Image (cartoon, rainbow, N blue to C red; front, side):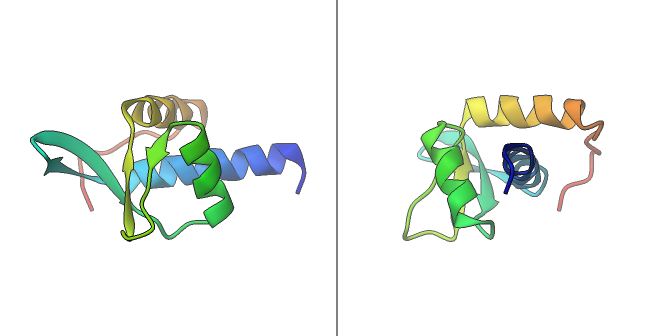
Length: 87
């Protein structure tokens, strides 16, 4: 894959994680969780960049504050606007 395609896939994956995520309480903190049904290589890259946290024992991951911020910026970049509806 070319660098442009790889970067687009990573950006779109982060955006989909954000758009399909939900908030829940975890140890007294509110976190944004998402299902990990994405390319494992992309997930690993997002973990290395500090945008998400995952565990081998869980089917979901947690988006970091930085990950949420980057996802929101990417949505604007791609012209995608969030609705008030939740999944």
